Image (tube, rainbow over all chains, first blue to last red; front, side, top):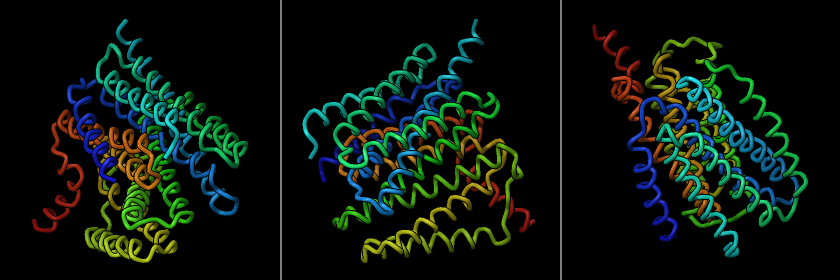
Length: 91
Length: 274
């Protein structure tokens, strides 16, 4: 448990550090990109559904897989579209 | 414990996420950063499937395919002006997924008290993030008014619901009761709505950013529930960077964060006093 806590604390500092110098124009894409990254809950959803033995657990697990997939693919695609728009602006 | 190759793959994925956030903070590497993040996600998901999908493999693939069929066209066809509410919606479904994962794990596994605490946190924060995001979506989509909504005695309703949550959370940890956890989920949903209703139009994106950080924390807490380091790292990264980003966004708009979140309350109080 202490191992997990150590990982948590270190990740907090990395998270603070990587975005501390972001330029204003990138606020929304960064938010959207971070949004796609927390779609990693898909990994958790797959793991619990892979253990489920039918019944409500299976149904809820599959619902979680579906929702998390929407989060992941939608998040990355929408971020890419936003950044594509920026590139067009500069030229 | 997972086999070494799984742990290594998760480590590479976590590195990809850090690089993605770093890239997204500089205009030059932003697009590359997003792609690196997507690659890390693909690696993580394929690894989880190969290692974890002992049962129900085809059904999982079907659910992933359904999610892609819904998510990709939605993200491709959305109008540029409607992107913030789309992000809010994606954020909301992520929060709901985290709450569901914790709920299922709670039903299946009889864990320690610490496990129960992490479950309670995931379900509560995930529910807040889900319902809060749905309300921000409705506001930006102008399905409902974008003006701050003040319920009569809203502060007391909010405080009451929050107290109910504070009472339920230890009860769930003490009894490991599934119905109580479901009740806590409902309380979280109510809290999310009450939290976003008083936020006014121009401040809604900042509320979305904060809810985004919330979902990150919910995912991190679910990582404790499942004992999965990748979920902890990625969720915490988003939670921490999202919090900083929320502050930066508020600063860029020249508004202290507390004003935005509680502005409507204080305005109402000032109006009542004056």
